[in-house]
Image 1 (cartoon, one colour):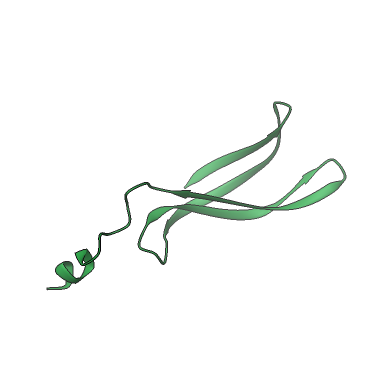
Image 2 (cartoon, rainbow, N blue to C red):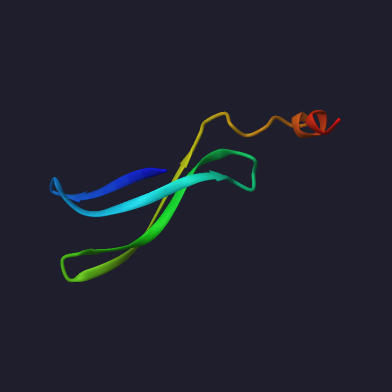
Length: 66
């Protein structure tokens, strides 16, 4: 699990947790969502980190099943 800090002018205004995720495309990474407040306003926040090159190549899944 990752912790992602949301900052405004170097002040932390929110912390978002991002858990490991296997995306529908086959790529691996992290994903988190939540709500934070900045001043008087509330925001819905999402963060997605996708490992570059983690998506299986075409036919690679078929070879693993054999």
